[in-house]
Image 1 (tube, rainbow, N blue to C red):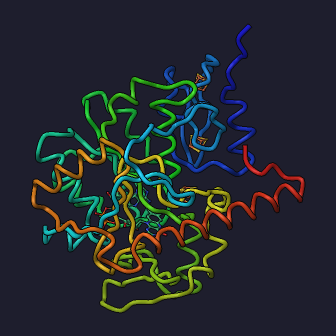
Image 2: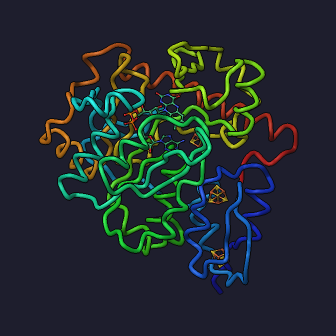
Amino acid sequence: MEAKPKVFGHLLKEVVRAGFCAGCAACVVSCEPGVLGFEREPKILGKCTSCGLCYSVCPQTPTSKSLFEPLTGAQSDPSVGSFKEALSVRSTDEEVLKRCQDGGAVSSLLLSLLEGGHIDGALLMGVGKEPWKPEARLAKTREEILEAAGTKYTRGPLFLPLKNADGFQRLAVVGVPCQVKAVRKIQRGELPYPKLGEKIWLVIGLFCMESFDHSKLGEFLKERMGVSFEEVAKFDIKKGKFICRLKNGESREIEVKALHDCVNPSCFLCTDFTSELADLSVGAVGSPLGRSTVLVRTQRGEEALEILRRSGRAEIKPLADFKPGIEGVKKVAGVKRTSAEKEREKRKEEGKSPSP
Ligand SMILES: Cc1cc2nc3c(=O)[nH]c(=O)nc-3n(C[C@H](O)[C@H](O)[C@H](O)COP(=O)(O)OP(=O)(O)OC[C@H]3O[C@@H](n4cnc5c(N)ncnc54)[C@H](O)[C@@H]3O)c2cc1C
Ligand code: SF4
Ligand code: SF4
Ligand code: SF4
C-alpha cells in the first residue's frame, strides 16, 4: 500500500509552528481546492482534501528526489553549486541604472525577454502602499519591471499573485534561494503541480545572506538609526555594513551584525547563498560596485543570457576580469554554509529539531 502523503497539518506542525516558514506562499497557490489563505503565514480556511501538495512544494520540507537538472559542461563547487559561466554585467539602459540595486542585470534580462516576446510576464517583488513593505506582482510592462527594481531586504509572499496567473503562459520568476527551491519543487518535486510549474519558463535566483522581518526592521531603523522607512531611498548591504541612503542625500550605516534580532529565523539554518537551483543567479558579491555578478547555470539560463547579449542592453564581461571574482562568491557562500551547519548542530545538541 502506498504511504499517505503528508498534508497541511504536518506542514503546520513541522514548518510553520516550528519557526521554519520562509513566508513564500508556495503552499497557498499550489492548493488546488483553494482552502489555504495567507496572513504572515499560511492558514487553513476550508476543507482539506489531503492531496499533500502544500507539504510537497514547501521549500522547508525534505525532498528525496533530486531537484538538480543534469548539466553538461558545468563546473561544480561545494559552496556555489554548478555553473557553466561566471560573468559581470552592467546595464546600458539609463533608466535601469537609476532604479536598480547593483548592475541592473536582473531588470535588463527581464526587459530583453519581455520586449523580445520570450516571456509574457514576470513574477517580481515590488513594494505595496506601505513604504518598503514587499508586495509581489505579475509585471507585464517595462514600467512594472522598473518599479520592482532594487532590493527589498525584508521578505514577502512572492507566490501569491500566481493565484491569478490564468492569462500567463511563459513567466520569469525572480526570487531568493528559498523561493527558487519552491519553484523547482512545484516543477519537479515529489508531488509536482504542473498547472503552475509549466508556466514558469525562467528562474532568476538572487544571492541571499539573510532577510529581515519588516516590522522589526522598522523598529530598528527608528531606535538605532534614527530614520523611518519613509525617509529611505535605497537600502544596501556592502562590506559588512547595512546602509540606508536617504531621500535628502544623506546616508546612515551600521554593522549588519547589529541587525541580528531582525533576521527571519529560517535564515539561520539556510545553506544556499547563490540560488543553486536557478537558471541564472545574480548578486553583488564578486563584482565591483555598480555591476552584477551572474552565474549561468542551465541551458535555459544560457538561452536567456544570449537574448540579453543580442539585445545590446548590457555590457557583459567575464567575471574573471574583476576582483574578487568567483573566489569572493565562494568565500561568502562558504561562510553562510558553515554558519548554518553550526546552527543545525547547536539545535541538535539542545534537543531541538535541526530542520524539518
Ligand atoms: C533579501 C535579499 C538579500 C540579499 N543578499 C545579498 C547578499 O548578501 N549578497 C549579494 O551579493 N547579493 C544579495 N542580494 C542580491 C542583491 O541585493 C541584488 O538583488 C542583485 O545583485 C541583483 O541586482 P540587480 O541590480 O541586477 O537587480 P535589479 O535590476 O535591481 O532587480 C532586482 C530584482 O530583485 C527582486 N527583489 C527585490 N527584493 C526582493 C525580495 N525581497 N524578494 C524577492 N525578490 C526581490 C525584484 O523583483 C527585482 O526584479 C540580496 C537580495 C535580497 C532580496
Ligand atoms: S487540499 Fe492539499 S494542498 Fe490544500 S491544504 Fe489540503 S493537503 Fe494542502
Ligand atoms: S510553502 Fe512557504 S509559506 Fe508555505 S509553509 Fe512552506 S515556507 Fe511557509
Ligand atoms: S537566507 Fe535563505 S531562508 Fe532566508 S530569505 Fe535568504 S534564501 Fe530565504
